[in-house]
Length: 196
Image 1 (cartoon, rainbow, N blue to C red):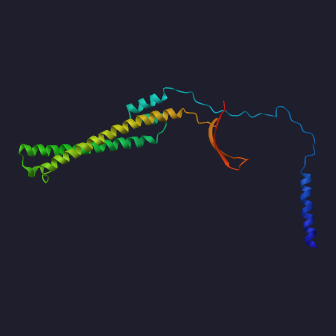
Image 2 (spheres, helix red, strand yellow):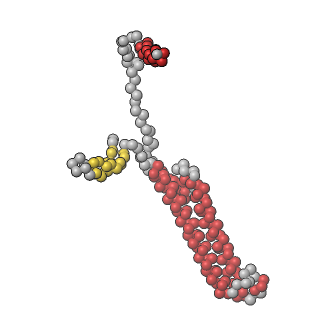
Image 3 (cartoon, rainbow, N blue to C red):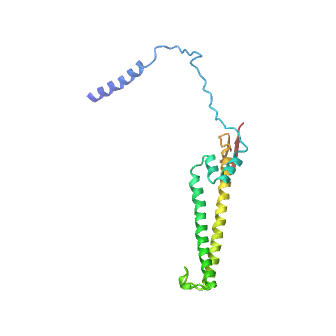
């Protein structure tokens, strides 16, 4: 019995607090100063600069990585210098080895003592084959380095061009699947939304 009384008291007290929490004023007064219409914030779109991609490419052609700094893609600068530096390193290594092999071969043909030369353990045919290989590797490293330099310029140009591309919610492409009510099969399609 005591539990029933206890539950009834709790139940009634909940309703009493809800009743006392009501406003006593039934009138609704809203002044025009209090009503404010929130304006939708419009995105500020920077003006289109048609020469920005050309400027970024020019900067990258002058100094590799400068075009990436111009487009504010600073994380690409170490990659550019690492790639071009690696190509230059392999070119110099292969070219220096090629020159050493060529000088050893020329010294042998000139009649110098073969035991005093750097590659004394190699035969003449091996020297010729190694010269060809290291020369080819040096030329390939130079070609890759030039390709990476051009890729650096193209990357700066494309990045500057894509920074001006509008990626807004006004233009969207959303795949959509609807069910056909007549035969209960799915209909596939794309919807392109474009608002001015």
